[in-house]
Image (cartoon, rainbow, N blue to C red):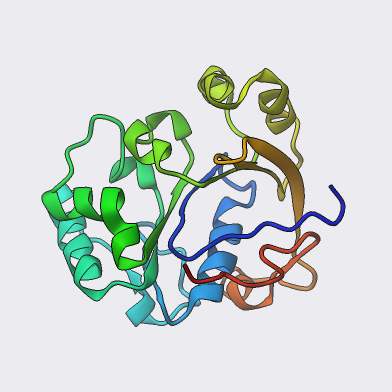
Length: 213
């Protein structure tokens, strides 16, 4: 797997899951930086300060109404990546979705809108959303999610995920049912705001590109 590259389209559905501090937001920032200016980050914890305000939205609440309003805007705009931090709050299993949010999640590729859901608790993420994903990226996950992950991808890969070190992740290609392990290399980056522009990867994602289509 040493020379394997990951090819990710801006219109893809992606899930990034892992415990706090394992590297999932760092990777999400890197992917977001590749999509500027065609990106909007739903940033409830205000973690994306290195991005211009036009590319991030800090919600005032966790309500479905506010999330739906943003989805309506993106549906009309099209041609971008929508990154949702704390995704289980907004695209959670059993949580209500407004009509525009439902359409964006289920038919967003018609408008060339991709969605990257970043979550600490993958077992709480909507199964309907997960079924639409092309890529799932696992950093080390908690024990409570172990059986849920095993049901999706099998115990062999689940055991690999549970043994991952910090900034290592397992990429699972849902369509091909293939997995590979990669490592984020931070180099000289010392502040979270700098990560989006300066992160280096031991194994590149699309050769350092997010491709259209």
